[in-house]
Image: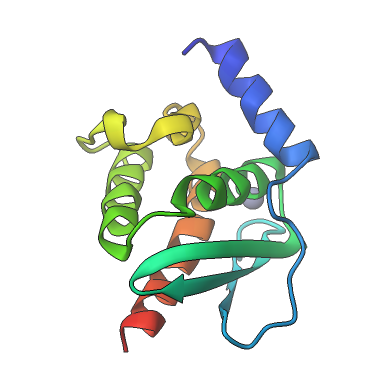
Amino acid sequence: MDDKLKRDIILEHYQSPFHKGLVDNEMYIKINGKNASCVDNINVMVLFENNVIIDARFDGDACAICTSATSIMIKTLIGKTVEEASEIIVNYENMINEKEYDKEVLGELIVYDTVYKQPNRKNCALLPFKTMKEIINENNK
Ligand code: ZN
């Protein structure tokens, strides 16, 4: 994937985020995530059924990287089991942190494979995934 295509995908998800807007349903697990180093302040809500993520939504104010990463994360994780989602999250975090990762499991999330070049953007790209991990932990309780 070339850099222009990556930028286009990020911009598209920033301008028209997937599943932005919360629903009033207490079956969802909802957690807030914030970055002290950026404006990022997001609420992510997820509905699980039989260990599968059947829906996820978000809202809040965040920069282009964080908003688009939340949007692509939600699009990628809906329909996945908790185990599949956890594998994607680990590989994504490894990619952002310049460790070895399996790009086959990441799909469109690969657009962030050069974020490490802007260290102050890493937390922006990681925030939705940190929030999703907390939601999965809450669901496992
Ligand atoms: Zn940010």
